[in-house]
Image (cartoon, rainbow over all chains, first blue to last red; front, side, top):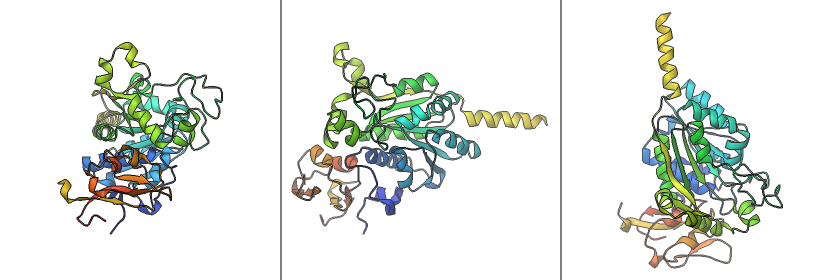
Amino acid sequence: MSDRSQLVDKYFRVDNLPHIWCPGCSHGIVTRALTKAIDELDLDPDKIVIVSGIGCSSRAAGYLNFNTLHTTHGRAIAYATGIKLANPELHVIVITGDGDASAIGGNHLIHACRRNIDLTVMIFNNNIYGMTGGQYSPTTPHTALGTTAPYGNIDRPFDLVRLVEGAGATYIARGTAYHTLQLTGYMKKAIAHKGLSVVEAISSCPTYYGRKNRIGDAVGMMQWMKDTFVEKRAYDRLDEEKRIGKVPFGEFVNIQAPEYTAVLAEITKRVEGRL
Amino acid sequence: MSKENLVLRLNRVSCKGCGICVAFCPTKVLKIVEDNKCKIIDLEKCIKCGQCELRCPDYAIYLEEGTDGK
């Protein structure tokens, strides 16, 4: 008998477990939620490709038992675009972090959104560069502490949801590791969506972010998610002053638009017909 | 799936002792003990809600079909 759940046995490379993530790091929770979403969609694992970049989040690809590609920093979406164009039948899921997706890979992210290519981008947002020692990232809040912001972060952060909305993504949701069931639901819809979908999964780095900013340890950071993130419809009903310090989660965009590989196939067919 | 057929399993080798399952267990079934890992201290109280499994970052605790209550 295995000493792991059926879900983990089915979708993880169990020989590589326990994983490298720190005690209480939410990345493990978010990764499990992704396998749950895939399981509930009943997709053929051979038709799934996980592409990751560099960073703590991107280690997930090594633990997942699908076709996986662990690529270069910030470039996961570029590799994923190539895979999708070569074989549009595949479900291509990008696992990336806040720094990987919005700093080093920021251009890949916005242009993939603009093209509306059928990729699913899961951004594990822990507000920090964890792997390299807690440097501030583009999602580190203004005034928050990082090893490279010892007196408080001067930068203002990206709101990833609004960023990808502006760039043209056609499915956008934000979930948290604490609100795991809802997160799984958004992941399911994102994977099933035809077009560029983004799920911002709020994760936690107790080692660097929580400790440095006195939010707390693993439990403290989960409590912080519980207290800070409010389901979008409830958030919308809050008075202006009650919204201070709260962040909405939920589904923000769910629209249909011409998908890149489908448009390309159509054009190819048309041009070939003329030859 | 009926909850009656579910049992709570804990793989202490995988547990890193973060304490998330302990903090969010609604019926206080779990505890971090001397070796800094989770232990099932009161299985009788378990309502098999699965909150621990959902939020265990290390896949150490889970519900499984079975009857022996190991």
